[in-house]
Length: 299
Image (cartoon, rainbow, N blue to C red):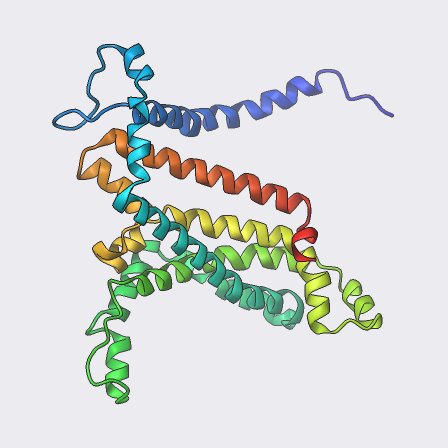
């Protein structure tokens, strides 16, 4: 076995050093600051209140008061709503995106594949905020959808399509769907079609080939798509603010409200730390599932 060249380890560390510095500066340091702030108390006019006796403060357990508060009453309800909305958005994107990615990767004519793939990423060419405003114009009482329903005689008065959870779900699915299609396409495009032919020769039907061959081989793409959709949906606040209003508040809106309106930095920091912990847990679970290929879960 050929030995690695002398000094290659130091060269690798030197190449990685800028990435680690950026990671520490823009992720780890702010996370550490937020964690420290989450254990503090709000001052009378915002900011952090001074702590006279830090030892007594830590022994009393008062540093965990903000975390305890986040798991009570209205805040717990908002947290569950955020999880449910993110899970629903991810599931819908997977249900819609998998057939699209499957067709693009395995069924679409080669001469049309580039064009169809380009159409799937067209939304990225426009600002996410502008696309969300476009949904407002579509769903409001005087919007295109209500006017079309009224013109066709299907309804007698405009439907309340805006400022509810359905509008938030539609906006989230529309915004996050390309992040599900692209990883699935990348995984399915590399699929060895001879495996599907072999399964068919052995008597496997279409559903059996999908469940026993296609889905396990597409597991890394599924895991990547779930992560890329679930994480932004969990911390989303633009879509829920514009399409959901006060009744569609999610965790992202709550965190933003605590920093910008309520001026309660400790409580907002506690919510942000909890959200970050949930994201890291999801990344860890997705990594394990992707490494195992998903065979155990899909078999």
